[in-house]
Image 1: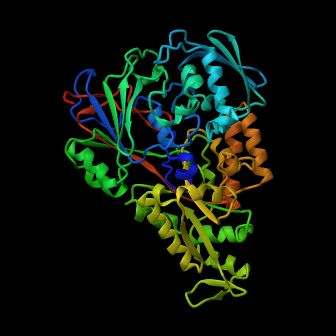
Image 2 (image 1 turned 30 degrees about the vertical axis):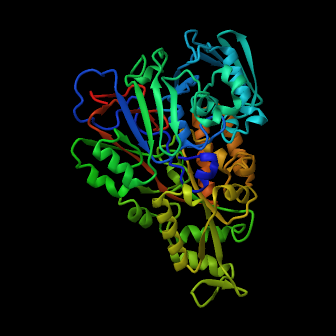
Image 3 (image 1 turned 90 degrees about the vertical axis):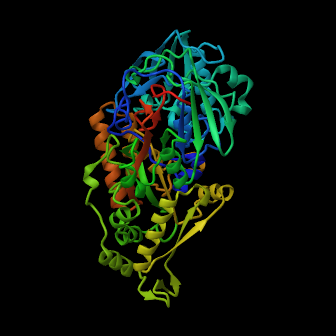
Length: 551
C-alpha cells in the first residue's frame, strides 16, 4: 500500500496494501463509542499515520499515502463502489463508444476549484495532458491512464477522452486520486511547486491544503463550498470538521500511544501484535479490513540465474512456510497468501488456493536436480564449489518492522533448505537505479488497488521497472501478455475474470513470485470520532467524519 512511494516504498515492502474491501464507502470504521444524534459541525480531527509523502502530486507519485491524503483535496470524474461498479461524481453521466476507445463525460456545471477557477472540460483536458507529458515524469498515473491518446472538448461541460485501443479499466483509473484534478491555473503557473504539498495543491475536494511541517504534520481545512460528493458518501455537503490534522508517526508504539492517550482520534496501521489488547481498551474501537490488490510478495528475477530456471523458482516456493511465518509475525491477525491478488480484489482466482505449498522434500529434490548437491561448512548448498546465494534488496528507511521480521523469517526458512539469502540494504537514492537495471535476485513489495488489471502492472512484459511499471520478476511470458491484453480489451466482466484467473494460475505454476501474506489495515478510532468511512480502495475518508465537542 502501496505504499507506492516512487516505487521505493513499494519495492522496499512498505507498500501497505490498501484496495477494495468488503466494506462499503459508507461503512463506518467499526462501532464508534458514544455516537449519539446527528453529525456535528466544527472541531479538529487528528489522523495518525505511519508514512509521510516525499511528493504530494498524485500525477507523479505512486505512493498509497498520497492517494489517501490527497483524496481530501482532489476529486475524480467517477467513484467506484465496493462491488466494482461506478457512480457519478464530477461527471454526471458518461457513455462508452461501441469500440471501447472513446469515453464521453457530461460534467457537473456547479463545481469550482478552491482558487475560484471553474471545473470544466478544459480542466479535464489540461490535467490528463499533464499526466502523460514527459516533463511530468509520472511514476504511476501515466501508466494508470492506459492507452491515452487525447482529450477533446465537446463543449464547456462535455469532454471526450479517446484511447488508442480499448481499455476496460479506464473507469477505474479515472475514479482514483492519481487521475484527480489540479486547478488549471496552478498547472500553468506553479508546476514546479505541485510536489511540495502546499498552497499549489488546489483541487475541488472537501478540504484545502493549509500547512505542512515536514516530518511532523499536515493541516487541511474544510472547503465550505463543497457540494458535489458522490451519492455513496453519505454527507452531501461540506466536511463536518473544520480541520483535519495528519500526524506522521512512523513508530508503531508512538502511533498506538497517540490514539490511546487521545492525542490522535484515528490511528492507521495498528501493529498486528497489539490488536487483541487494544480491542479491550475503553473508548477505542478497532476496524480491520483485508488489503486488496497485489499481496506482499517476493518477486524472483527471471532474467538471470538462478531464477531463469523454473525449478529454482519452484524450489524457493516450496522451501518457505509462509503460513507459519504469517501466523507468528502477525499474531494470527493476517492470512497467508496463495496467489498474487488478495482475495478481496475483484477477479481473484480461488483456483490458486492449495495449488502449491510448503514442501521441503520437494524443494530439496528440485535443487538436487539442478545440481546443487554439495554442502559447504555452513550447510549451504553448492554446485561446482559455488554457494547457492541470493540477494533481497530493500530500503531500510521504508521497510516496516513487521515486514523486516517476515523477510528475516524467510531468510531462515531458505537456510534450512541450503539457500543463503542476503538481505541487502540500500539507501533510497541508490536503490532505484539498481532495481531498474535488474541487478538483483529478489525484491519484495505489495501494491494496493481495486482492479485486477494490477496484474498487468506487475506481470506484463511492457511494464518494465525503468518505464514506470512494476514487473519486479522481469517476466516476459507471451501467454501472460496475451491474456492481459485480451482482458484489457474485453467488454464482458465474465470474460475478464476468466482471463485474469489464467494469469494468476500461470504466475504460480511458473513460480514468478512467492506470495507471502494478505495484509489487514487496522484502524483505531477514539470514541469522540465518528463517521470515518472507506472508499473502494479501503482508504479512510474524512468528508463525512465528525467529532464530539472539544478541540
